Length: 260
Image 1 (cartoon, helix red, strand yellow):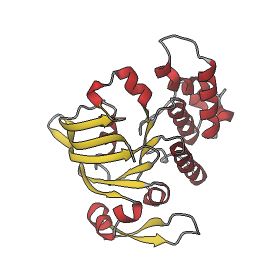
Image 2 (image 1 turned 45 degrees about the horizontal axis):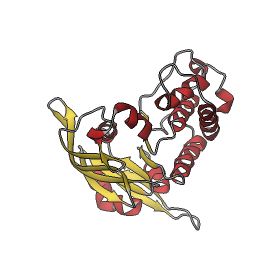
Image 3 (image 1 turned 180 degrees about the horizontal axis):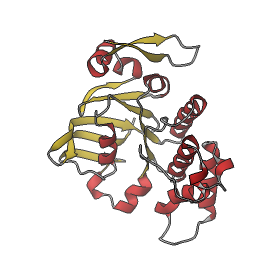
Image 4 (image 1 turned 90 degrees about the vertical axis):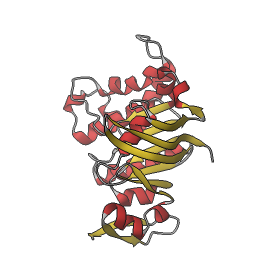
């Protein structure tokens, strides 16, 4: 299976503080890969490094089989869509116009929206259950409603790599499940989805693979039941967990149970 995003011995940080240490990981096309780990593990830093927002101090980052350094900023914006963890939009812009910003990498500055752009915007709003907000101002929406519109903006880009940082944080349980189902649907189109999550039960149920980080280092990578072994849960998170029996055809969920 091809790696849409590839890290080999990557270190990166903020000034003298290293946030990633010799990270090697692969993120495959057509798969949902979850990034999990405690606070400060380096999850967001890994995404920022993939986007080129943060320069790797050593190691190799490849995007769609080509060295990241060889990509122009415009081409990289078409290849990777990003929903940041701290994404907010409290200004009085209509939700549809905000989603339209996701089409910017596909057209020249100040160029009008094309019919293809309009279709992509409508599809993204529908998939995020946000069409009813299209004509409302962002500063009139709840945190959960804004989160759905912001995700629609990322989907509207229709990039082959989708990076999503803590998208479930402001969503109610029903929309958390809808979100994860939506991310899984993206993989049917060959999209590589990389999502950071704190909820290990969502991660174990909906991700094909997990990369477990702690203090900027990869502790484990693989299928959820392997990556979240008892030893990794104890060493990385300081917890034990219960492995819930799943209905036929569904994935078992790993539920944090107690601190160690």
